Picture 1: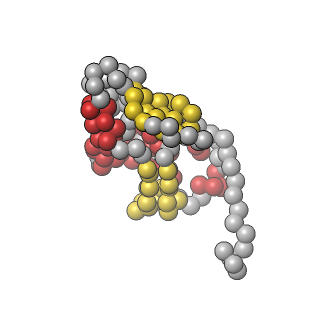
Picture 2: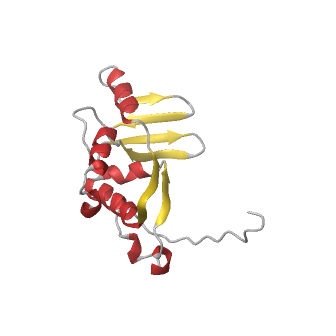
Picture 3: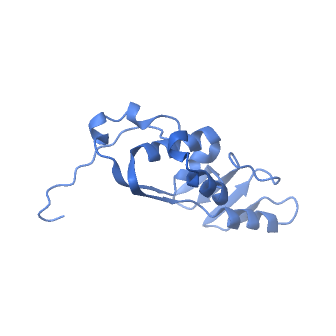
Length: 150
């Protein structure tokens, strides 16, 4: 950053899974579309419902320049569900003293709202998280009408 001046940051409290971010963030922020949108280990919280997932993706698509890059990291759905399926009947939890994952139930996977609780020692204490079924996500964002739907 030497010779480039100071890095400026502004923070806005907004739930981008529920609200259109341009309703809260000043319009000058959006004068130029963003080159990159990065959502690291947070976008899976939007998958509590289809409406929240759509709003999150709408906020990304509306403000990302054409050809821009969207980077998102979510827990691997196949690993989570395979691990759940491998548990003996009646068991819904696995982990150790450092981490723990606990599903409320087994059953047919839901595309949205498939909740589990996550614990990570000294960082996360039984927070509800949601499975992102990756193939469904890829199909959704690959549709030609994705931008207009969002």
